[in-house]
Amino acid sequence: MPGSRLGYDLLRVRLRRFTRMLHGAEKHEVRALHRTRVASRRLRELLPVLQLEARLTRTLGRRLRKLTARLGPLRELDVTLELIDELRGSERYDADAIDQIRAEIVEEREAALNRLPAKWPAREVRRLGLKLGHLSDRIESNEKGSSRSSATRGLRWAVDARVHRRAGALREAIESAGSVYLPDRLHVVRISMKKFRYALELAAEVAGNRGLSPQLRLLKRNQDLLGRWHDRQVLIDRIRQAQASLGPPVLNTWRRLDGLMATLEEDCRRLHARYVREAAALVVVCGNVSGRTLAARRAS
Image (cartoon, rainbow, N blue to C red):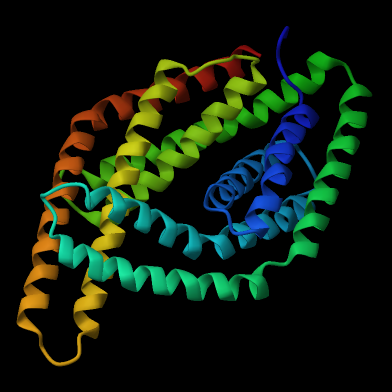
């Protein structure tokens, strides 16, 4: 198919993004840490469709997942600090309570930064990048050894199967969450939506399509929405921890934290209401994409 991309090309694009961010991540730059995690997730989404040996796919996926997990706590603290700084500009939130929580998170982040060098296996991460580079060369040799149409067809079949599975998982999560505000189930929707979006973006790249489709725009909008919800939910949990760690009962401090938490919970419910209005459209997208991928496989 004209304009379609092969597996080695998709791997190299993602690998370049991954390795480009490593230097900044080692220096603990906020943006680089975030992009390193995103790049590792996109690599994990691609590996299973490259039709590699199962053991190699599991090993590489496990190493990438471990890297993502190591960077997770620090990234969450950075996001929480960004949210707090955003809230400080609004009169809706108690400034003293926000400052108290911010001071605790800044202290926790400094401790996390001090621990990171011990957990950041620079040599192992760079070795992983080299291994993925050699793997892309091997895949290129295999794909160029067969016809382009044959290589593309095999890749598209694998990607379509993954898209179909991701769509089913998101539809199931949305239906399970319903319209009642249940944070645990809403979190499952958020994670399922992120995975479905990555799979759909991969399918678009394989087909050589550029730009965001209406389906991807809908997914991105709602992923951002649920991301804002999740950030506030994390901050609420931290406020609860701060309340629990207070020494002698300080009624005024407790009330301030309680008021901040109530305002954030109000934000969460408002964001949830916006998501509920879009849930039906998301289910339709899941059904349409699943139907289209199945029809394409039957036709081929």
